[in-house]
Length: 251
Image 1 (tube, one colour):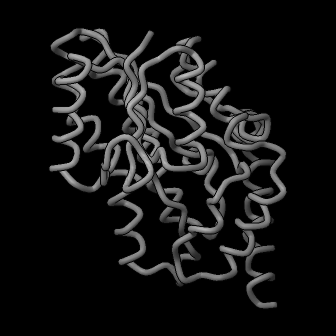
Image 2 (image 1 turned 90 degrees about the horizontal axis):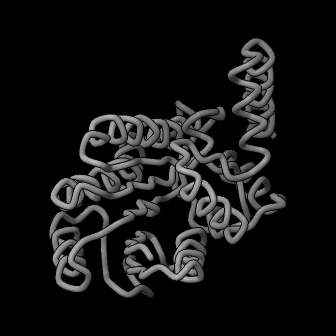
């Protein structure tokens, strides 16, 4: 039985992960701005300190930190503002950074632990029109790999989860001023054959296998395989997707 903290647990994948861990028999602390066991704004150092204090007082330590909290957003390069970029960086990247920095001393002291960062396929296979989102998720991939290498000597593991589009409230909370991108993302989310429960089950399976990179759905695995085995075809497909986005934006 593991002691698990999940951020962004009020809905979507976060809630599904909480339920999946609890079904496995784990002790889970769900955190979010609202609707969770503990209030945690991932951009707040004070909230992270309070979460660590709660975990240490309640459990005496932590086994799995799941940095799930994040927002969707982005836009074409000439539409996305610097302020929109900053908002995504603050939550998607620095939220995970704060979580890791908060619990690294705990993991080192107990000489065990597992950091699980929820990124996106966009961090590995970046679509046109979402540079800011892609960049934050790619940074989370790099952060996770660095964490795993740096902390391996302390008995700490790290995994990054990179799902493709799945049915969730993502499109309802999309940030950014580029409406053309928002319409495309909403359509892809709505038409996905996978829901948050499917992704959560695959994440648990990946954790149990000890995977460092978890590609939890077939679309993610196929896209990443194409990029790594046939770069010319991959580039052609991604450029075609960019052209379609521009055509759609022009109406």
